Length: 130
Image 1 (cartoon, one colour):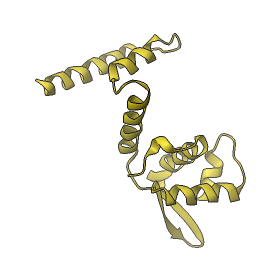
Image 2: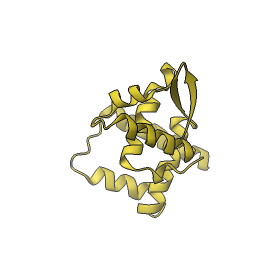
Image 3: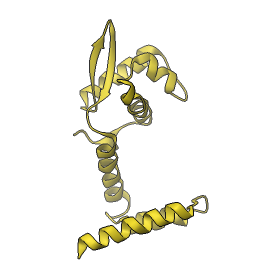
Image 4: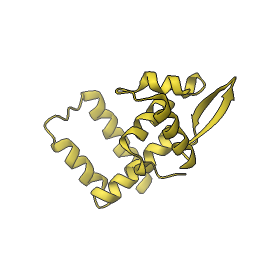
């Protein structure tokens, strides 16, 4: 699988648009343009989609005269790979250090439901480690 941490901001935005439309059958250039927060030209979007395909992130099918783009890997798999890259690059491969940095930010809010979910996930991981 291609390394998702090597994507530019615009490439990440386009991948997000493609993932968002995958359940509906994929994303055309027009779909991507409609979903971008600050869309650029059709030509630039087509170019970036082709680059993402060359990098191994996307594939396409043909619907009439239109290319429909699909992600190569499931979102969760790509997200896990990107998280691992961030942990390695910025936090010495330490999840506790990364979480401490995140929770130290005053803007970070954690609902009681999220706290329970995190507690359960930690407990499950601890049991697997025994």
